[in-house]
Image (cartoon, rainbow, N blue to C red; front, top):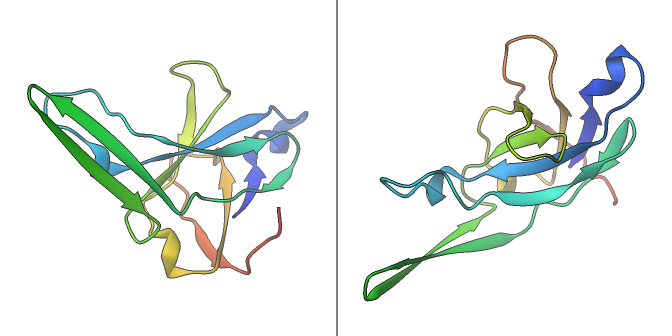
Amino acid sequence: MLVTNGTCQTGACVPIEVGGFVPKFLVPGQRPSGALHIGRVEGRTACLVIPAEQTLTIHGGSSTTKITWTTADVLHLTASDGTPLSLLGQSQEFVPARARGWSITLPASGDELPVPIAAAACTP
């Protein structure tokens, strides 16, 4: 996935951490958990790899539940400056497996959530 660092449009680039929010991992009554770490964009662009899958394990009383996310499931990309609670932006939802590659600018300028665009696969 080719990520363009949207902070570079106003001058010097601020490094961003790109992650993924997985709606499938929402547990009723719990804070959101199970975010994916995708990578870091230091300069204007970076080619990052979305992991093929991730499993969230939930321990409750005497039972354990495992929920597995794959690239065939919905994902929202997130951008932060790497500090806790520093969400700089996020994308609209998309399903990574629907294309070989993706392109997006994070964080986006304006109020609209950016949409990842199917593109040729980049090489990290």
